[in-house]
Image 1 (cartoon, rainbow, N blue to C red):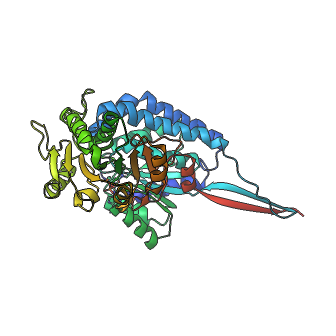
Image 2: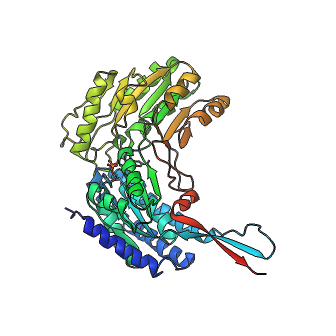
Image 3: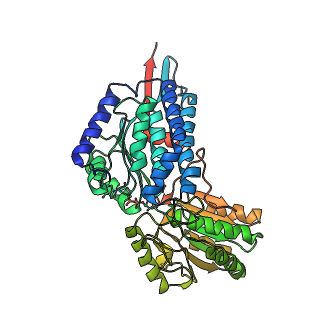
Length: 448
Ligand code: NAD
């Protein structure tokens, strides 16, 4: 049980962050000093990885196999990457007139409010904290209601690493209370948000109604996985289809939830996909051998089951459905596949955020591009083809922040991640993310 913070707690956290920023205990430390503290924090995450992995699994129902192998070590690696890059980014001296010297530097913004979801709780928090802290900002982090534990433990580890008091503040609590308070707070200088498009929209309103603070949004997705008949290795494609939609029980913003397959290979591919689906056994997420766990909550599972009911009227149920035989809680939803789904069907348009795949056949390249782009989201897409020419023709025309070719969900700390359209416009990861947490400052010296 974790106590809910309220608006007063958000105020206290912002005030602490403000004091810390203004007195320079972190913001005016050298890049190298900040680097040392954050490298220590990255190491402490690794030293406490087993505990953090269990906390993440208990909170979100994520597989312990994943939290141990990816979420926790991945979070440490991202923090380390930002700590290591920060003393290697010089400022600029643009050419100006004689007797002038213009210095362009990156300045931290001040107090950053970070609001994150429950599907990758620690990792998403680190996506925000690492570039924000390394550039000298103070942060108030609001974890999702369902997954506050690793954020709280991270704050303890940050103190142990030597991060000064007030620089990182964690306020768990309801989104409409704590999240809203941060979004509207006059003393929060920027918001970084990952979550649903509906709530992202609210943060833009909060900013408009308060101080015009910049808001960086990473929102929902409905990513297309486009398979052309000239992709020769259908077994590899089938593995990609499975990983693309069933990883983390489909609770992935970039989940490949729409499979667009060229009609000539549809039967052969679906046979392979359904064969693999039959082999997935839902089980206890704390058991390292489990390949599929529950969703984050019964509430989320009910939402997903609602979409499955809608899907029964829209496509052909090829696998799964609403029940998992013998499951210990109602939070389990089986891997579910619908065939013959029209591109404008509800289950092909709405982000379900669960293990539900909508399959739509196509005939031509033009049709595939049109269907893939026929979504209000634009976070990611995958494209399978052994034709180099086709890959180069199609990839640029897919409206998505990341196009993975002959694989799914390509991601790396060195590469920007984010979307087009209603998937948002922020870019997490890579050196580009530093732009979200710094302002360019010109100091112009007239030395004549
Ligand atoms: P959500 O939008 O419900 O919640 C996200 C955060 O916003 C939580 O901390 C929540 O407490 C807070 N919040 C909720 N209502 C609020 C309000 N009225 N005012 C202020 N804050 C509020 O999202 P979720 O259900 O936690 O996560 C799933 C969503 O996150 C999906 O849409 C998914 O696509 C998206 N997501 C996107 C990315 C990405 O990088 N693009 C990554 C992961 C998840």
